[in-house]
Image: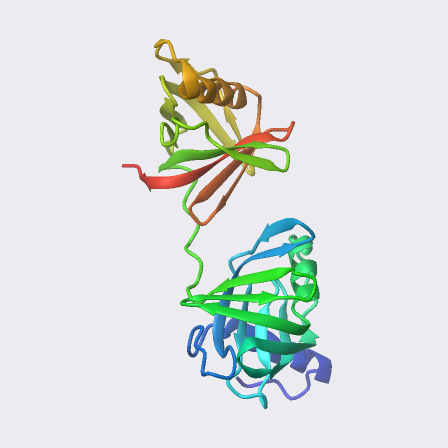
Length: 270
């Protein structure tokens, strides 16, 4: 990379760091040469303070094969470098180096990741997974495979997997698993099953919010787990605008009162 002669030294260093971060997925992915964790690892999640934080797709670390080189990576928005010392096959010591200073939306994840990725960390490797553990039991879960691209909100068949209540997620009632599936077409036509009855409605997507109009459904009498699931989904869809977020193949819909659902992408709808 050619750098203009008259750029300030600090700016040259920042440009160099950004370029290194952008290329951090080059080279071997998640290989273990016996003495450490060399290669590129894509962060999946952090668990700390009793809370799990899902990683942004760009969060990653590239550990060097030699201690003479520095690790590079991305905290979720900002790039960073670090010195890594391999303490045998079961631990590493990380000394944070330089970092970019961009304003980022997901500051909670960035702050937690930068706090955890420092000091002596126990290392556990299993196939294509790598887990780093701090002394207090917090973990950084990583994979050698890059995250799957986010499924589109529309034109995807979503199978409801859990119901949310604030910070708590509970699996759908036993006996109703796989029964509730819905799709939002590109023109806003929503349809599917509430767990027992088929339904249709008009959906409107406005930025991070999606609203469902009145539901029209079949009129079968639904009892037991399927009826319980159907009642909760009917109430959720009719509660007003829902916040939506897709991460990989998982959709989360959340109402203002904290109720909501998670769903997995079942298939691409025609």
